[in-house]
Image (cartoon, rainbow, N blue to C red; front, side, top):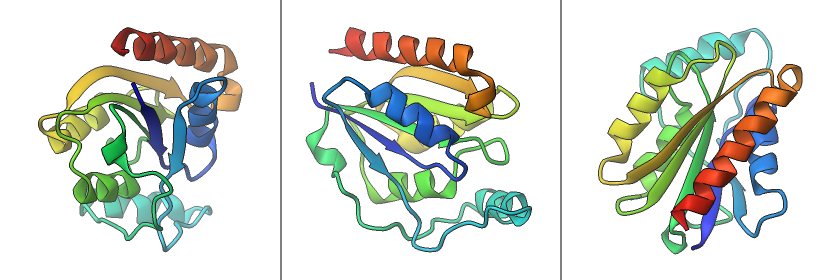
Length: 161
């Protein structure tokens, strides 16, 4: 079974998790990069949150990996305004993931991603969600928990194969 991780990361937390999941496997990793970057200063919460609330779909740079060639797709996102990021929204609007097996991964400062996962599932339609995992951020302050969750994600991947 071919697997890929699509992720968006502003501050590096979700990047760190995507790299850990893929480490030592043959799976591909594809970073979703908006053509217009979000600020990393205090405005990130205001601008990013507003884009989530208004369901903005920023244009993304060209993908290095196309989802059509994969059976298992991991979608990894930070939680913004109790939902998933605009970059993930753009990816979901642009690509039909019906009949794909999907694992949802979220990094969250509050440690909760229930509303985020609910919104993602609504956008995924006919996809088969085979796992949902949340990792408290910043990841660097929660290494033990993050590593344990990555192990669970890998077990879920193995169970899908």
